[in-house]
Image (cartoon, rainbow, N blue to C red):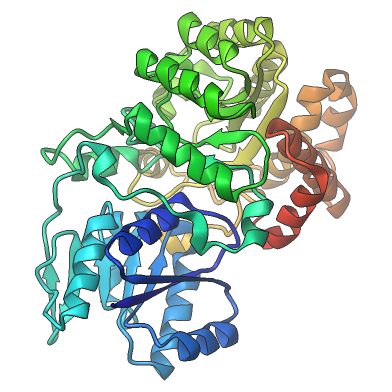
Length: 467
């Protein structure tokens, strides 16, 4: 049968990769995952495996590194390279890169099965839906297939492609819902939803029965720590969530962590989470300025809504993490302090801050350009490698932004430190401030997901270059 060698440059478990593994195995194809960004080791692995196809799952934040590796592979091997994931889905022009032969747009499970079937039978694959294919100096741009519905038709996830070291340093990951109905200005979700307009229901759930199988798969491979539900849309279907967590409680006593939109966090929703041993939830505050949140970020809930939600979570003894951005277009220093203050009022257990990083072709980029914060030729080459380093917006006090980020969590956890920190942020940013931030950030991240200390330290060491 045909063999795909998937190369992943980051030492983290990704559900999308595990689904591709499950899909190809369901049709008896060979899926080999190699996790490395060392080109010498990658070339050696290709020599050993002799794959029919080499694949990368590509996010926009790492596409330049992946293209660099692909170029070096092509210098030695004449093996087709396919690029899938969010970047080629939304920026298909990446196929024009000389090192890329095929891109997959959108969901990849069945497109990849069709591709490997064709390779196995030595048949042409220029007309497979979801794929753009270079052949004979032409690019065949095939249409998208309909979204898979019911979602249960997708082959069961298979985490066995990852080695034990990667999985033991991560909480069990479960991805039970595909699609998000919201349209935040800084997110690619609206573009993806528009891409699939007319091709089926965008937000889809696995059945409760299938969801339990997905959870069992995670429990079989990952360390025994709280289960992380990574889907964006918990709370839309309250009955489904109640039924799911009821069955979940029958197969494990492990607590769980999930993402929760403030708009979906009704009292009934929180009552259900409390009933079934929810350890913590993650909430997108993003900005404490209601004006910035509504007009710049397109997130429509009030500060009072956030305080009421926090009070309800505290009442049920459910801890919560908040996501916050600083350095936004049109944001003043006063607005940043409002973000800090709303977190203090919420008594946030695990605050998290990041410097805003605009992504091309999102709505907020147009907003930033109109305000003179970005040049008209802004593109992927302008994006910094980390959300913790610097702002790329023009006419912004970068030193102040960096220092406020470095002390963001400290200010919320220890509000009485405000008097001192207001003076520290006037100083030149330095290595001590930076390492203090990393220490507090790591400590709160570990606590927010109830991770064991030693595996978490290993996780940080493996991913030290990602921040």
